[in-house]
Length: 321
Image 1: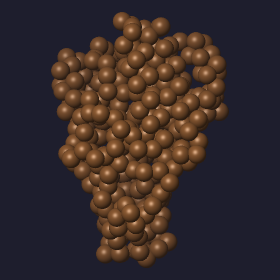
Image 2 (image 1 turned 90 degrees about the vertical axis):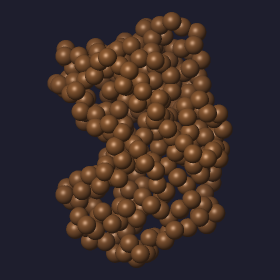
Image 3 (image 1 turned 30 degrees about the horizontal axis):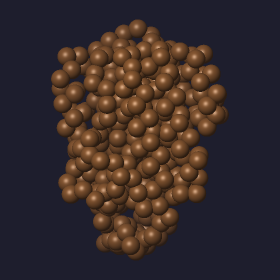
């Protein structure tokens, strides 16, 4: 099988690069895997993207790339739409023309955050800013392309608050907690922190069978986040406490992680206040499958606290804090 992974330098792309390789035990037959980043393929350049797809002829496309600069997107809308909407549309067109599978990643920002409770996949999208609008446009473009074809499969995984290898909220909190004696963190936005490695395993568990081959699954949108919920303030407090328990020397004390409202920390782009998403659809699709790849070692929909705790412990033991 030929696999093409876009976004190799991002947190999710790095997770795939760590987990997927030609010698990975999840594959019965040795695959051919190519990881590409901006230096290998500029997604803004449509001809460059199409040339790569046509020359490599992937059977599985994993689009872990995205324009994620939420605030800069307000002034760089053309760039955001080119990467988040047009490029995925071209990938989808290739997939249907070549009977391939497309795995694409989207975001909680496609919602306005006004719903009470957990969002479902078919809830109305009403993004507030350019970033969310461009990601929603990408979802719509993919679905439209596949709707007119009987070939190929696709899965759009909506997720939230991703962390992994690279810059993210958790590492920012750890850095600031060593530099400052007080942190002011937003407490009225709700969601679920998602480990990039967990997300990669969750999505592959839907798409690959026990031999590491693409299996039949219901194409569509799936919410992929761990169980539980928290706020940015709740996450920051948990990070500080866990780091201190791991023996990390911090300047800030847990009592000095102060809760503030969104209004007290204005930003160029609006954020959804509620990013909680139900994963019942993805769990049901996995349970309904008659094949499961045990080598993926997907831990299930465990709580976000367990994964954040493990993540911080690994950073601490590796001297990365």
